[in-house]
Image: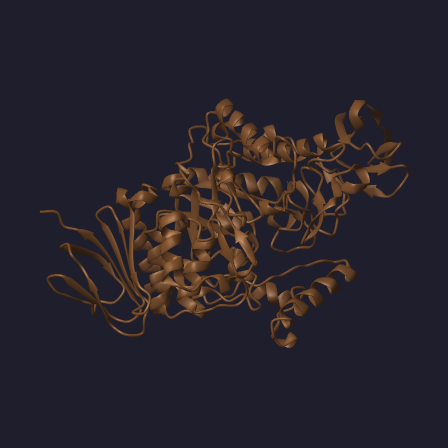
Length: 574
């Protein structure tokens, strides 16, 4: 017999359905119920209603509406006992969506690409959410069974094997988790207990109840979820989605509690573990240590740097890009992390942010692309479609030589031509229709022809987003791939580029001439964003390590860069 527990303070009677039999459950204090079953597949029946999956289901082999399956995590034979993740401060992160990374879209097929990822110089693989969500494919941010790896990716066994092989290749693995909302299909938590609150709102549905009545067990649910991924699946860290939509007025914020418990697990296991936040709050308290009255999250994504870089290289000024576009913005992001650090944002129409005083630069992840910045566009265009090859190389050079931890989105390194579009596979017709219509109306408001907006529910939208690995052999793609590899090699072999010190970043630029230079110790990055050759002052003798265009010229105290080009150089000391 297998013992099962569930937190369900709402119903007055809870039973377990297994093997066609109903097993009674015993009520325990604080809303918990306990029972035993014969077998491994089961569902809960609340007050005689329809069978529902376990909120803490370890596996949903038939999807979000099917029965749950017990998993004995002790059965898997791990081979990574001597594994230790490298520090995040020296990382190169590679973001992966399992469903589109390979034609098969499984953990096993992704494992076959790990040698390639390792050859790039990558140290950390970050998986977009793999928790069980509605349908066969999707981004994963509408997960509902947060303890269960997605069935179409091949479930718990496949995920453990992927992580184990990553560790054998010297690759750390991070997992994207969503704790601000759950998806609309298969979300049965509210029938068990007060997991959600009407006191706050999120753009994606009901907010999670983290500070209201009975919230103690809700917080426990999410903290236990995080600890499970780190313990039972051996992940080396978590990326926490959209923490600005995690609402909590408690004296000890949920994120602080989570960071404390992860630190305790790190001390217990002796494994380096990290938490990375996605936040648009520009609030340094999130990544300030708890000893200094912060939340204690290790790092955060740096959207200000991305927006500043993207706006300079593309000229786009729509939406939040209206706050960016100048080289001064880009320079400030490289020097301080936040562009909006207590100054007025025209897009938000209010003062935004706070200065990140005393925060090291390697507590920020910097990137030219990520799943959001590509997939939230109407057509899911990558930077390689929006920029010339020269500007693409400039963007990569500034990311890889920035004081931030660099992150690459799958295929970015070879200028993949395939888009990354928003795709879903909801089987509920009302939800499917709402998602399709919502996507069209969202971009129609910006002047797009609704007929040109890819339908998220169309299987072709998902198919278009799969990487075309054969492109790497084509000359234009191979050239970008070589550029990325050489940039990573330069970064990892020069301590001036990995030290994460804002005070050692020196920026010079000419807004009218459209050039920018960055000095980090002995290293120099020279960029010409204009369509004309530009002569840049160079006061020190430099050894050129890498140039995007070999036609640059040098004099005793100047360097002339061709249009849309970048040079990486090192100061020569007498």
